[in-house]
Image (cartoon, rainbow, N blue to C red):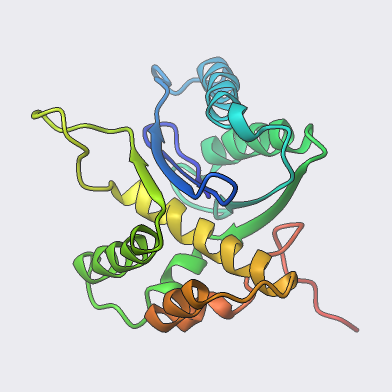
Length: 204
C-alpha cells in the first residue's frame, strides 16, 4: 500500500473494519538532494506516513511496500527513504510488512497495453468496492474542489494494497463474492511475489 517517493509517495489504505478505502499522495522537498537534505527529508516523510496511519496504527495490519532497484539515477536516495520508512513501520509490532520489487507492477500490468488500460482496471476494482457499500476517500482535489483522478502513484500503491487484501483473505480462508469479483478482473493478484526480506531465497 506504499509506493515510496519524495515527490509523490502513493499511499492506499483498505480499512475493512470501516469498509473504507483512502487514497493519499505525500511529498517532501529535498532541496538540492545533498546528503543532509535527503536524510532530513526521509525523516520528515516517515513522520507523514505514520501520521496518515494514525487511525489504524495500533490495529494489526498487512503492509505492502515497494522497495527500490539497486541501480538507477535515484536508487541511492530511494534506498535512504525506504530504509527510514521500513524502520518506522517495523517499530510497531502490529505491522506485518511485505516487500515488493518494482517488477511487480509490470507483472500485474502484463495484460494491459497502456496506462489507460491499467487505470481502467483500477477503476473497475474500486467500483467493486463501491458496489459492495464501501466508502472511497480521495484527498487530492481538482480546481473545482472535487476528488481528482487518481495519480499514477496512488494507482501503484493501490495495486500493492489489493495484493495484501487478497493475501489476507486467502490466508485466513475468508472467501467472499467480492473477492471473486476482484480476482475476475485480474487473477494475477493471486500469485505471491512479495517477500518478508525483499528478496526470494532459493531453497537448497
